[in-house]
Image (tube, rainbow, N blue to C red; front, side, top):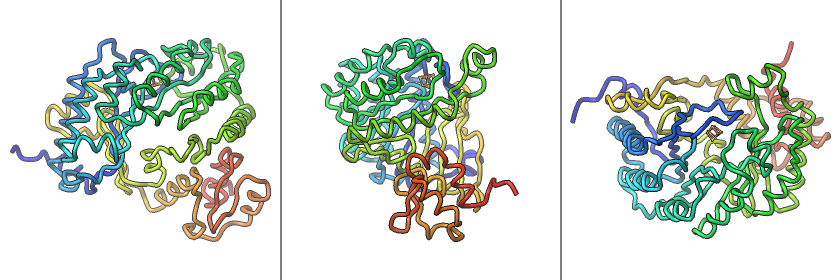
Length: 399
Ligand code: SF4
């Protein structure tokens, strides 16, 4: 075996993997609001991609006994993107099979105990793909629905139309998927006249186990930012953002959904186990271009450009581009944010100072509640999370 590259030693991980994220960077076009690190490709270099990701994992395993011995400690695997559903089904099958081999777990574990999520665009969900994904071990699909209004989908540069969403859900169910999540985006520009209540109802009619709702944000260097800068459109104001957010809480609660995190609602306890691990500050390993890893103290991220990533791992170099070591203060702040984002809330005893008197106002206004020595946000509190953190910590408050 060739000696380890000094950088591989430097970036050696010291935790057993329980949560694994694999980033698939390819998309067929860029959505109008998206600033993710993606590679727009007509032809997906599937074989090169799978080889590169497995090579990255091999390099990590060479330098880390803990990762090598993770074994059946793996609880969740998330294929996110980009558009993982653009990978041919055979490539997904090979990837999952090889991951199982490397972690020395039976491939069947990916079908049962391990939560295996695939992000998919509705137009990629065909009966053949869905059946192959299920056979490969995927047991949860997160569909990028975004809206049920064709005009809005066109504006977003999405490549599906509204009818494809229902068809995709039906096709997935026929293939045996009962854990389906839909993503929707709210707070769109006013002139689109998007009927948010209708979209929520149509999403609810499909009875997905899970829904993720994201408010539109304007990111630099996106088509949306350009449209706004030349006055062709404008972002929704805070008032409408709040109205739509609260409307979603009401509408979805009526259908039995429970918001267990700021942006995520589930029925029948079908929470995302993978994302819940992020929100509880657990360690995770990310593979693929732009993927992040975290061990509880150090956050690392991979080179984001697909070609640069592929060349690096091909040359036996770590894919890591940079890392950030969180200070004690940053870790405390981050754990406050994470705790308050979820319905578990913050254990008052975890605060390093007494609750400030303003907390009583948060409670009396119905923005938060104190339950079993935990401070738990209500939807109105989630809309004001930054202000609550400022109150609790004094950080960011003007003197
Ligand atoms: S499909 Fe997702 S990752 Fe790809 S461009 Fe659209 S929003 Fe971005």
